[in-house]
Length: 267
Ligand code: CO8
Image (tube, rainbow, N blue to C red; front, side):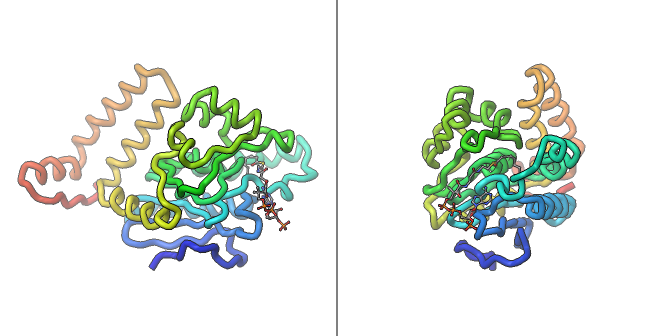
C-alpha cells in the first residue's frame, strides 16, 4: 500500500520513501515549510536516490510532494544571512544537488501544487514531469533579488525556449500545468486525484522494461543537451550497438518473433 496522497504528518524525516515491486517512491516531507529544500532534505533525497539507483531490484524512482507543494524552492530561512564566502566554501547547491545527475535510472517527478524556484528546478532535473491539473511552475527568485541557481537558467531554456524562460525568470510569472504542458516543461497533465496513481502505474510499466535499456536511453537523450549533434548521434549509435551485447535485447527480439511476452533479466 503506497503512502496516501493527502498531506503527510510532519516528523523529523525530511523525506519518506517506500518501494513496491520495481518502483521506489520518494516523498518530500516538510509540509509546514511547503517542502522548502533545506540541506537535510537535499542530503536525504540524494542518499535515497543513490541508494535506489544502486539496487538491482529497483527500475524507476518517483519523486513527489504533497497536494499543496511539490517544493516551494530553496529554504529561504536557511539562506538568510549567508554571505558569498559561505556559499563558496560550503559549495551551496553543488554539495547536494549533483547527486541527482548521477542517477542512471529514470526518475519521474509527480508534481502537485507549487513547484517554485529550486522546486521547479528539481522537477526539471527529473526525466519525466507528470503534473496535476492544479500544479503551478515558477522561478520567482527575482522577487528575492536572487536568480535560479540549480540549473533553472540552463535547463529551462533547453526545455521551453528563451522567450518563456525569460518571462518566467524576469517577471516571476508562474505557469499553469496546461501552459507548462504546451511549452514542453511537463510530460503529461493528470486530474489532481489521479496524479500519484498514474505516476506509479507509469513507473511500474517502465520498470518492467529492461533496466539497462532504460539507462541507455536516458543517457543518450541527456547527451542531446550536452554537445554537438554529430557527437550525440555517434553516442546513440554506439549505445544501440551495445544493446546487442545484452541478454535483454536478445530476449526482447526473440519474444516478439515468438509472439510471447519477454522475460527480462535486466542484464
Ligand atoms: N523557504 C522557507 N520557508 C518557506 C518557503 C521557502 N522557500 N516557502 C514557504 N515557506 C514557509 C513559510 O515561511 C511559512 O512558514 P511559517 O508558517 O512558519 O510562517 C510556510 O512555509 C507557509 O508559507 P506561507 O504562509 O507563505 O503560505 P502561502 O500559501 O501564503 O504562500 C508560497 C505559499 C507562495 C509558496 C509562499 O510561501 C512563497 O512565496 N514562498 C517562497 C517561494 C520562493 O521564493 N521560492 C524561491 C526560493 S529561492 C530558490 O529556490 C533559489 C534556488 C536555488 C537552488 C535551490 C537550492 C536548494
